[in-house]
Length: 411
Image (cartoon, rainbow, N blue to C red; front, side):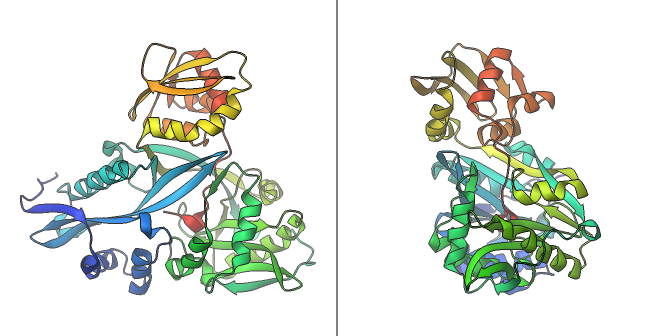
């Protein structure tokens, strides 16, 4: 049974002077992670200019803690302000008193005030987050037995290891070029890439195995790279979260994959998860040797429904041009109610009024607007209900874009 929060409790963003107490708290919770890695996660995040750490204080001592990370994401022609939540922890002496929820409510208020569109997190305790408005997402991953993956390459392209620090500018160029054709991608900058290594080094959540990339060189130029890291889905598994090649050099990917698999086996992994887009060349090559699993630890909350829709207008306008006639759809969800008019003449977002209604759960709304699922799939699992004509229009305006969030940028 939960106890009431203490009367002397206060919640606020952490200042630099609070960092030692915050590190003490997270180190007691995850003692297997070096303190230096915890510190890097707190102070060296590449998007720290838009990040926050919130804490609840009891009697002047830090008792609960949550860290936020800014992650701008491109969805087609639109760029969204996305924030991830991590390191939500409460001192064991103060648990079951609602302190974690107090911290997260303060964080949500800040996110909305900062203009964030959506918030995502990964968790094994979804019931803790659901009362605050987060809904479940279902993401598919290809899971493979580590010893059952055949050699894909012919050894034509030797693969070498590259420490994550210092960062190489070529990697960002390859990432951008490889992701240009994909409708969902994180908006990395050169500054981000330069700051990323210190943040990731030694981290079990975002760091690479042995803090190294696998890279393919051609005349001393990096033309492909990949990373493997601890899975956030399955215990004892490692995950291939990134495998990119310059356009026209995709023939290097099989040899790159062979190296990543060999590294995973050497590290004792029983299974390897492929966390790559469904249309990635390696996905088709490896699919016959594994099985698709559903990751249900991801949760999402739309923070500003009108703002998110307005940000998506450039992408929705492109899709609406193909509608036979204009569509008027009223979206109803835990994030609010909005009416959207879309057609060849453009897109308009306004206050809720009469029109064909589509009702979505919190998770269904986020999955639809981020292109992670289509209306038919959401209807099948009970995440969407409403008039069939409106659902058909939504399917054209918000098609599934093949979900992919690289675990190298995990939350």
